[in-house]
Image (tube, rainbow, N blue to C red):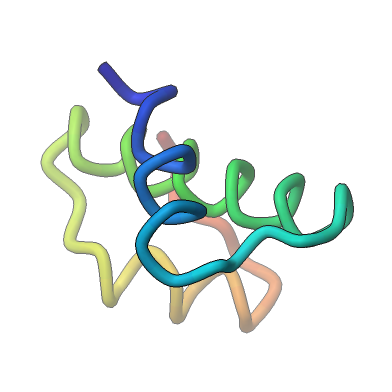
Amino acid sequence: MEIRIHKVRQKVSGCLRTLSGADQFCAIRSYLATAAKNSINFSDSLTKLAEGYPAAV
């Protein structure tokens, strides 16, 4: 399930110490999960997002 990955990450690396960091991680994870479900390459989707042109997912 998508929601558990942040808990695992928190336990393993000590990340997500702030609510802001957790929100950012969840937003990116959700974006990549949607891209994967629509067969869009991760690297391409993140590059386009950074350029201001999010992939049509």
